[in-house]
Length: 137
Image (cartoon, rainbow, N blue to C red; front, side):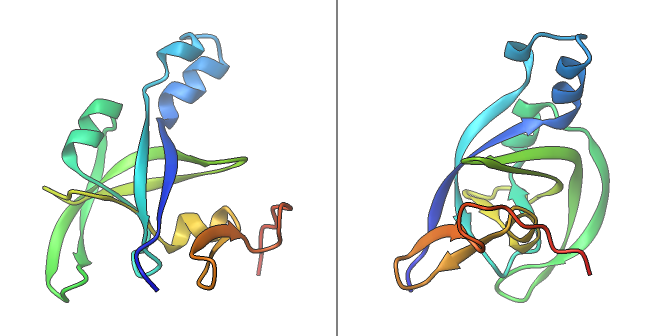
């Protein structure tokens, strides 16, 4: 199977909360449309520092991450960011990979949005069709 890309909208969760409470207007929510590489080997959402700055995401801390080439690097992670894909959404803390050229959509947000890769048709699809099912075990 080749590489699979999908269109996402990512939003500053703090702004979404402020808009819901009337503190800012909906059009003031910092957000952007991105094309992301679906990477089931990545744990979460991976963005670069330019996206982090444009969305105004604060830094929550840092932690070591293992990259695809097996090297280990300490990366910062952001305060919560909302990910929207079609009729589904989730909130995660993104890992900031300095100099990353692509946004990576990892396993945790895929699982939370009840999504999977269909290797036959090479598309992202709902695990349970159009119905969104959350697994609690």
